[in-house]
Amino acid sequence: MAKRGPRIWLAVFTGNSGLTHYSFCLARALAAAGAEVTLVTNANYELDAFRADFPVVKLFRRSRMYPVDILRFWRRYRDDRPDTVHYQASLKFPALELILLKLQRRRGTRLVYTAHDWLPHRRRSYHSFLFRLYYRQFDRIIVHSQRGADFLTGELGVARDRISVIPHGEYGFFDIDPGLDRERAREALGLDPDVVWYLFFGHIDDYKGLDIALRALGRLRRQEDGGPAVGLVVAGNPGSQGFDRYASLIEAEGLAARVSLHLGHVPVVDVHKYFKAADALLLPYRESSTSGLAHVAMGFGLPVIASDIGGLPAMVEEAGAGIIIEPGDEAGLAAAMGRLAADEALRRRLGDAWNSVAGKYSWDSIAAQTLETYGSLAPGKQGAME
Image (tube, rainbow, N blue to C red):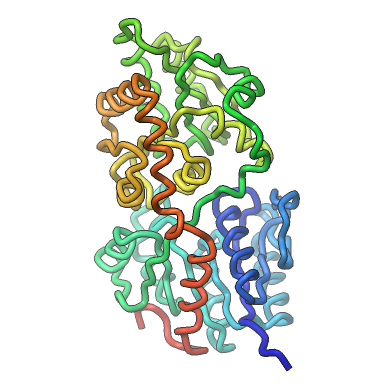
């Protein structure tokens, strides 16, 4: 009888976010490597159009159903009895989940956590204490950069030998139409073909620095001296905070003709249009641990201008695929945007540079490292700080 592969659950409470995209790509690569993988996700799962050689369990629902869904999660876990449960984030309420994790540990399940964000973006005074306790429950914590490992060790007391640094893979899987060129992508989005377009993509939140990008664009508009026109595509959902403050800034900076707004959730089948239409991606974040968007840019060979925070600079500088600026530096961002806008050959060279790290960020490589991490853990082993 052939030896079966390890039985793994990848658990992600959302079905339509970057965490879902990461979990899908990892699940697909683990399955290809011979593991028995189940992706446990939300009813709003948005990747049904993409081939998956593994079961997808759409278990979680709206936040108000969370206590019930935790029980459903537990019952399904008891029935399936996976060897390893690999969480891609705290499911929503770490304090409540501590009970679940302790019960799973008693059953001898290996528990792994990928800290995409080392702490929540909207931090409260109790978060450091809570996540110290939460991280304690896991046999291994995976981070995507050495900065992440240093933060967990220095700020949260996680033992260094309980941390694995495994890169975040590229997101070329979004390219569902390899024949789509820039001209047709711009036509599909209603963009002027003669403008150098920068892209600000994804959920719009204060920490991502859209206001910094708009002020930088305003500087460029005022400084134009016959060079190429520069514009900004804003594609994403403002959520509950609304877009009024950004709309006011667009008006104040005189950018109505230079900003193309595509507000709301962008369907995954349309992501490729935005990245193929753009000349470069902007990530002017004030704070972040990492960004899956940089890995989308990698998949499309798109240069990046990013803040010097989290794991972004190491990744971009290693490849030589972009320009790093100081967080909050709108003058520095404007200068970087102007430099790229004026030099098409530089944009092409930076975009092509992503190819130099293709092997490191391939999902086959990441799956192999992840399986090695699973295999190094003994069932029932104590958690990361015990």
